[in-house]
Length: 162
Image (cartoon, rainbow, N blue to C red; front, side, top):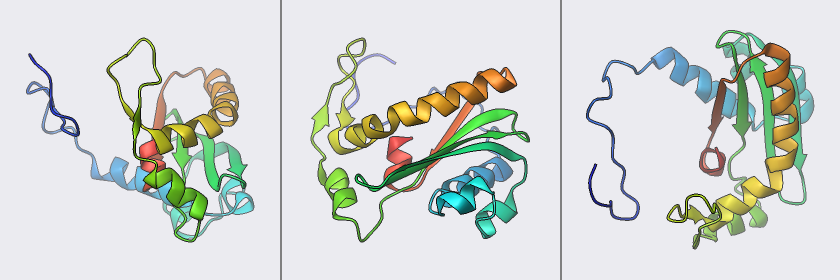
């Protein structure tokens, strides 16, 4: 499209198909996001209750925990989707650190090749805290399964990091 969009707006290509929504895929991603709130042992054994019971085929799970920043995520292989998955936990309501990330809403432009791309400062900082620990197992899963497909999900702040 020509021109620029106001900050906070979104534009979709008119040529995008309207029949591409999949409720089952959306529910799968919802359960992957929900599982990110479970403990490390529950996620790595894929025994986290309703979210883990709802979907099968999740293997090679690496749980990432940054307790000082109150951030967690996991990386895994999804044999059903034949892709790597990354799931980020959202805001923990009792965490002052999480609320500080949420409320650090000034924008930063951290990507030199995209000088006009502005990012929420707190969410960018949260991603940078997790980045190295997410990328190592992600690259391992991609290599092991010979795929380049990565699906990313999260809830609340986790969705913003995703």
